[in-house]
Length: 261
Ligand SMILES: [Zn+2]
Image (cartoon, rainbow, N blue to C red; front, top):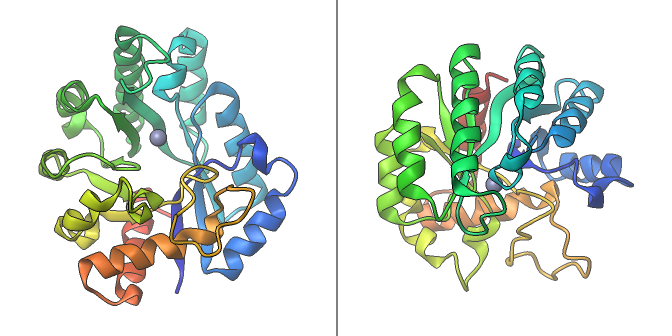
């Protein structure tokens, strides 16, 4: 099976010392290609550098996460526009809204999100989106730009069935992480993940976060790695009542088409 991890935060400091070993382990576990999430000004540069150093294996996104929206200034906007011209940068984002933590004020998040929607529209890039506790505002803003961007994935989807169908109605893709492997808080996803059309479903680790709780034994360091992506694929296959090979092949084909890999 060949899998594509559409969201790995490989620029996180926990990977600084062994990213090559992490990529080797990923490859050995069927994860040949990964999209490295760019979510901050510095992170975007690191993600692009990784992608340049691993052509055909690593790709990058470039954006500013809502947590960092307060840092979004004209220079950031100008640099994002330059990054969109790089062949290795395959999506605009991570961008969106996060009212769970509100590290940046809501008005600031909304403004940074809209500026990135404009960039995605101008450059014809797919969107890599984050939404937490902000569904109504997020949906309203996304809806205004949806026709002008080629594609959009709501990554690390953890919301309700109603929210899921709002996004599917806007022709969005859905990214599922190891959240679904968490029997304490992910069981609602297990009930409706089968409602996602196979050509709209992609899988991601969000490493180093969200270590799947189905990994046995749990590594003592608790760091999630792309090598665990198959655990997520297996849980989704169980919930969709389909062979894991089918889930794997469909999610890989969907990611390839979405990011134009
Ligand atoms: Zn996110």
